[in-house]
Length: 363
Ligand SMILES: Cc1ncc(COP(=O)(O)O)c(C=O)c1O
Image 1 (cartoon, rainbow, N blue to C red):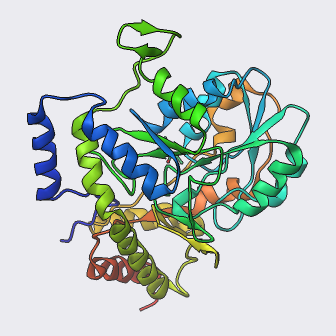
Image 2 (cartoon, rainbow, N blue to C red):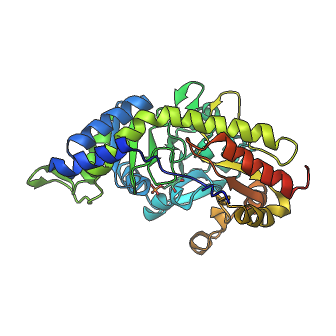
Image 3 (tube, rainbow, N blue to C red):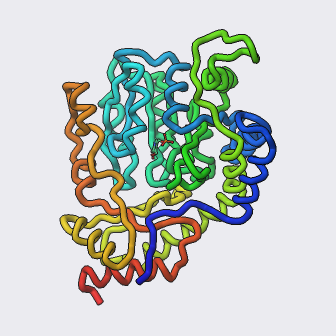
């Protein structure tokens, strides 16, 4: 029987050789590989700076600290995202104000203005599943109400909004290299990209014990650094990222073609260069039965995410005014993520589609 995983890291001899070379170099933390990776990430995203950290969550914790996010501040954020999108702001006492989704699973920008209060300080759009959020409208609203915009690009490295790479348009963009992501480093990893010199400098300092130089610490920081082995691995991955994203888009196109009329497939806007971190179908009340059917045929699936963040116990314990978000609440019961990664052979995609067609009895 075939075995088709939901996702797969990019692992080649070139990656292994880069890791061995880094191990043998005698340098392990924030040295030449990290410096080069940062320069290459900034170039790829189209920003002045990229600052590595040990994961997205750590990087965002420092970003919110640098921005002086404080108790009572409100941030507009989609509920339908990975839980970490909202964790760092909660650590500084800010409140996530949850927004419902549109049909692309990104925040519904038409609901933003009604959610703004005198305490609102920013908007955190998430380019979910690799599809960019509707940034023009978000920036228009942010400008009118004097709010900052930070892009959650954890699932969208290399995606483009009207030709511009995501992560280059907000105050900063934050990326994750977690093993399922489009760019991976064989473990945790993350970075922020920004054009703001002061933000980049502050994060560089905070991630390294508030160090001004080797023996002088001018503020209380952390150890949220990155390492040379993973940077060397990431550099190889980044060189292949665009081709791997193209591979994902070919997989998505094949799914779209083969699943048309069988299950609702994910829509993409004309202005979006989506990089399909996930390929998510809607299955109504048949979701769990279909997942089981596919598992029996060796096909890995996932649910991203089965619990909406505004209904997570950690959130309902913290905040009283929990909103009703009908589209999000419906989606979490119906969505199913199918296997996708840059090197997934189209014959495997066909196998998944044949299995889904068989499940729905449409042969
Ligand atoms: C949309 C989104 N935001 C944030 C994160 C957090 O990333 P990390 O695991 O690198 O902290 C993830 C990863 O799960 C994610 O998918």
